[in-house]
Amino acid sequence: MSHFAVFDLGSNSARMSAWRIEEGEPTPILKMKEMVRLSEGMGDERILKEDAIDRTIAALKKFKEALTEFEDVTVAAYATAATRQARNQKIFLKRVREEVGIELQVIPGTKEAELDYMGVINTLPVQNALIMDTGGASTELILVQNRKMQNLISIPFGSVNLTERYLHHDPITASELFNLMAAVNRTFNGIWWLRKAQNLPLIALGGSNRTLAKIERRKEKFRDFEAVHGFRMYTPEMNKIFNEILDANLEQRKAIPGLSKERADIIVGGLIPVVTMMRYLDSDRLIFSQNGLREGALYEHLQGVQKVIGGVTEVAPEK
Image (cartoon, rainbow, N blue to C red; front, side, top):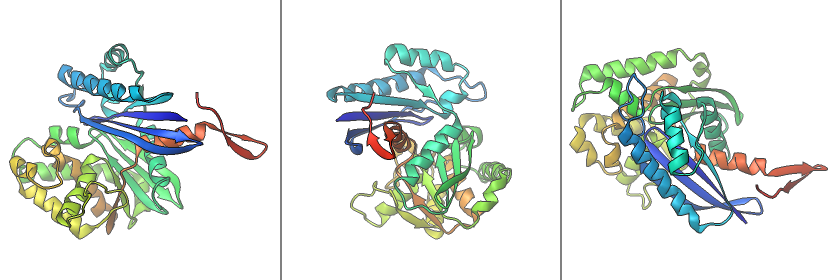
């Protein structure tokens, strides 16, 4: 028996998932999340701020401490958009190495998209779809045809940097909203292969996107409203919830059931990509996934510990 854990350091949140692995079969044992806002205030200078770094290091220490009760733990630690874009990346990584004792691997957006695909394709019955993972400072798009990954891209915008760039008033003004939606739509127009995703379902990952499902499930009085994996939402329901969020000011958004208070200030910027994409594709439904980068890293790990001998697949000892 062994254990495998993934640290996923995004621009808005830091997350950790861990599994027990017995005879090649994973069992979830631990999930943790901290809203660290690593990309907060980076701006055009692309500098990670001291307060954001301190919050992030504190969260990573908490994750590492939680793993001490388990034996034989392999840890994969990934940093995504905020760290990718940071000009002081080396200084930040050195602090993490010295203060936390882990080696953060800064992965390109294309690798993030590949791991998202692995997490989705191994846990949802997907045939043809567009996967969209909206994070704090990047959005990954993956076109799936016949369960195969055909095209992918990582776009350097997400809930935090879109909010900081375009939305400066509370309530949000009509001109701010128009400028933001127009900019996102222009970006999508420049991705030639998106036309192949016309009318396909959109599989939504990321905290902002999953908020739509949580709000809807609270309205429908689901017992576990946060269990959104595989949950479907049709375009009219999505538009109704988005209109409700748009009509509210910040304090009113904090009171919406299913919408985290910590996400209320960036939720409009976080939802613009998915709302715009649904109209762009003329898609009629959203399918939500709770599995993405971390679960993709798990399946990649499981593949890596297998070896084929004489046509027979065996589970090799993990290192």
